[in-house]
Length: 211
Ligand code: URA
Image 1 (cartoon, rainbow, N blue to C red):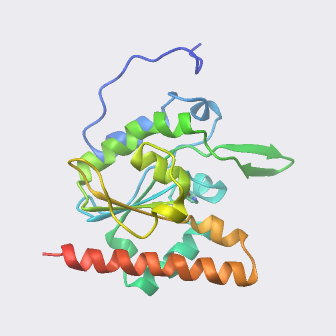
Image 2 (cartoon, rainbow, N blue to C red):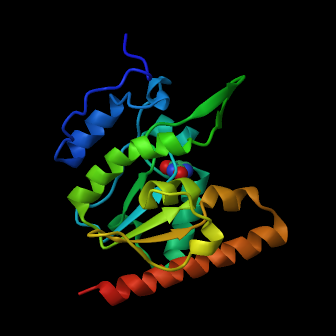
Image 3 (cartoon, rainbow, N blue to C red):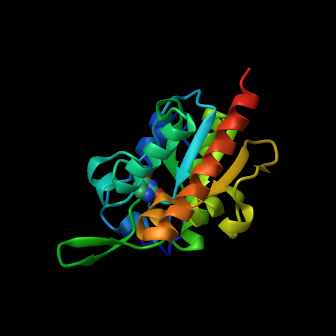
């Protein structure tokens, strides 16, 4: 039996989004791939100019098989709409393709991926970006930022401005909507305002880059 400790031969990455979707389901490159969940592939138009990257599918996303369709997705949708960004014209994906969780009774509680797991999964998002060739990437939260920038960054320091990737898209980072959902009262209002401001700046950049 293959275990996560046995290095796998580097296979060639599929050259289509459908091929990557099939391959991630079978991916056993890190321990999360062994937890019996279904992988969740990115979704959206192949010619999207903006790719939105989350951390990993949540409980709802894993069950339904689509990214950002649970509570965090609903908050994201409403902020995108307010900023004038049409989600249907963006490609939405995650830094890690399987749901990492710990079972507590009937509930599956989210667990953050390790830096190593994010780094291993970068192989797949690189494949998606190679095919889509977006001008812009929005990384939601620390895991997505690590997946895109290849290093751990402080969101509060790096948010709301472009981080150009050599020969690739401009990466913008902001908070993760699940983080906003965990806050209450004034803290929540303040962070939602910051999130909204980041999305407005990104929308302005999209307009600047539009032909
Ligand atoms: N959180 C994420 O980071 N991604 C999803 O797809 C859903 C929730």
